[in-house]
Image: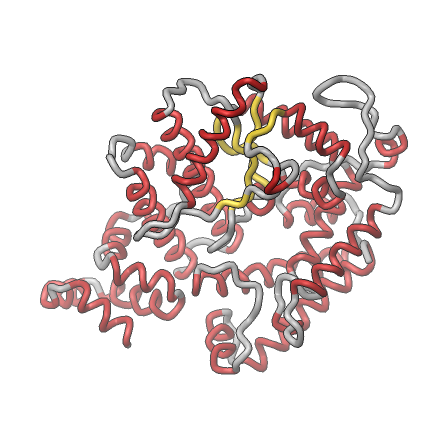
Length: 431
C-alpha cells in the first residue's frame, strides 16, 4: 500500500487516474502485481507514473523484441544532445517492458534472458555508433566481444556485461582505439542522476586490469597461448561478437574455438595450429589433468565466494548451485570442441549426444531450469546481482510465494532438493 500511495502522489491528477482505473481494471491489477513482484520496477513506475499505462496501451507487452528492432528504436534518439540521458531513459523503459512480460507470464525464463541479452546487444552497438560519430569514424575500427552470460544470451536482471575489444588495425592506431573504447564504457557505465545503462566488466581481457583495453587478434592469441590460465581458456567457450567490426569478431571467435578445443586428438597434437599465424604453437594452460583443475577451481569458488554459515542460501556459488551446471556445460564444450556459450543449450547438447545418462540429464536440466527461474525472480525484485536467498523467514516467505510455493519451509526444502540433484550429476562428470 505504501508504494501504491507513492504512485498516486507521483501521478498527480488523482481524478484522471481513478477514472482510468475504473475504465481499465486490468491496469490497476497490473500495478498491484508489479508492486508486489519487483521493488526495483515499482520505484521506476513511481518515478515515471505514465510508463506502465503507455506500455499496456501500446500492445508492446504482448510480443518479444530482438536486438535489431531495439537498435532501430535507439537510433531514433541519435540527434538528442544528451546521449547519456536518452540511453538511460530508453533502457529503463525496456527493462519495465521486459519485467512486466515476465511478471505477467508472457515470457518464460529463457525468453526473458534472451530479451535482456538483446537489449544489452543493442545498447552496445548503439553506444559504439554514437562514439564513432563523435570521433569521425565511418567504418567500425574494432569489435565488441561478449563473454560470460552476455556471450551465452543469458543476461539477467542486474548482470554485468563481460566484454573485450579486439581489432585488426595496426599497432600505430591502438592509442586512439583505447580512447574510443573508454568512451563506449563511459557512455554505458557512468553513473548519472538516471543511473547507468549497464555495468561493464572488462577484466577478462588479456592481462586483466593491467592490459590494454583494445588488443589485436594476434596479440590475444599470443597471450592465450603463452600466459593465460585455464580459467581464461574456459571463458573462451562463451564468446560471441556483439557490435562493430564483425569480420574481426569472426576471426576472434574462430581463434577462441581453436583454443578451447580439448578433444584428445587436438590435445595430443599439442594445439599445434595457430589460427591467426598458421604455424605451430602450444597452449601453456593445457594439461592432461585439466578436468581436475577445473573442479579444483570450482571448489575454490565454493569456499571463497560462499559466506560462512550461508551455504544453504548460496544458490549460485554453493554446492549444487548454478555454477555447478555452468561449469559442467563448459567442461563438455572443452571436451567436445563445441562453441556453445549458452549453458542450458550446452547441457542439452551433451544429453542429446549421450554424454549424460538419460535419467541424469532429465534430473539436471529440470532442476537447472528451476534454479534459473528462482534466480530470475530474486534478481527481478532488486535488480542486483544477488547470489544468496534471504536469511530471515519473512523475506524467505515473500520469495517463496513469488516462486509459487506455499511458504518458506516448502521453498527451502525444494531448493535443497534442486541443488542436491544438480550436484549429484556434477560429481559424476567432473568432481
